[in-house]
Image (cartoon, rainbow, N blue to C red; front, side):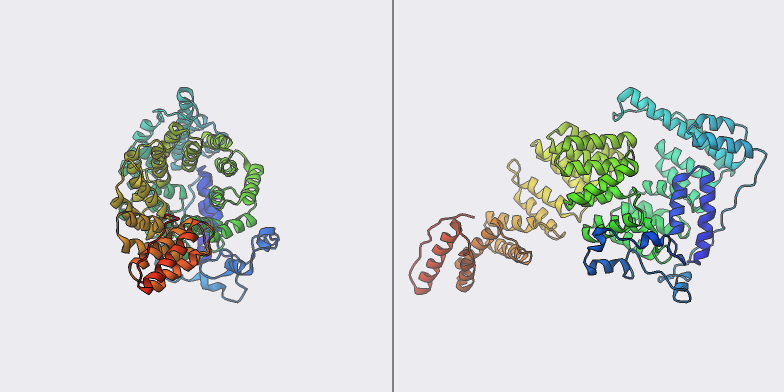
Length: 598
């Protein structure tokens, strides 16, 4: 890795070039990365000095996380003359990057004034006027902006036709009418060698929209190899990497932007530990990058490390109180933790910041869902989808709301729309399985649960859902259910459902040894978590009877004695078992009077 100053120079030049070509999303990303490079002075000492009530009240051991080496969110800055130069060298791992020339601005030609006018029209969203102004200009920059304006004009018209034909959220086969013309022009430029990295990026988008995904992938690789600072091109390429094999087949130059791409691709492919390792490595230079920290928090949320993820999201909001990016993930985390007050504060904050952002609508929808106001939640999810029809999380979460409202046709439609956008979204497949299970269609449910578990094989909840489906009355495929619960138990089943069901099913099938093994493991889990309830009573009763049948008298007495602490019918059953154990020890046959069944 080169020096920090070389990174700054590359990113500053990239911000200018990307902004000049109206690629504002990529320019914003590069700008956020630029200020994330280790600086000599804090970005905002005023902000850094403040602390929210929640952060100041946090226990000391949690606050230390923010300054720990390796995976901390905010590290103390280097003092002048201290160890600051450590980050000028190659980080641990010693990756050798290719030398990529800094981007050079296009020379100003005779059409510069026309370009400035076209850019003004473009910024006012008058795309066809912008393209018309540049119709006679031949510089590469002008060609890109003209083609890009035509593409966006076609997208705008497509959205209008979809609303006219099917309504704001309806299905429609309307296509961008400019694609054929743009493909013809850009392919000719590529064949003649007169195309630049930005037109290659646009050509890749056009090919993707026309369904030529393999060629689009190749073209986007050419684009990022030629100009690696365009994050929008990397993002489009990542969207085409639907499998690890496709990702590994890409012939990418070893530029440092490739590490950001791989980390993002690993995240999308559910390889969260690999993504975390990449982001931790990139912190060597970009150690104050909010983008990297948001991605780390997202990965930890996906790994269900909610507490660590929440600390990072809180600090992100403290540093940037008007941030909306990634806050929808934070709202999902707060929803999962049932943090009413925190989710309410977040919803109020984004509403005041930018209430018509899709992410803001999704956060507000999550708040209403947690309050049990599912109809209002659907209203905000639909609003988010009007703003961005391809907002995957909104389709999936709206499906969940329709399930709560028992509106199964609407739920199925929402989940199918999510799957159409991203066939690798395991949550949508899981939602379809749940919906068909509600409709008493277990074979359909099994198909969708299998798809979901294939995409996310480490999620215990998916295997439990499949096991319950196999166990249901229409199927009664208990052996298959046992296999599913066994997979769930090996996937860190936090709720302990799998162990209990394994014990119960083995007991039903007359396998007392296996049942006793799982009941004992479940009992140990409940004791470690200090849990009480009917599952513990059931485990103690079964183990007491099993040990009595196996002549393990002392062990059976221990389980019976524990049952005496309860006040229900299980107490009388335990007394009866103890009497039988004493009679068995004295040599008399015993009769157990049943007062309570498992």
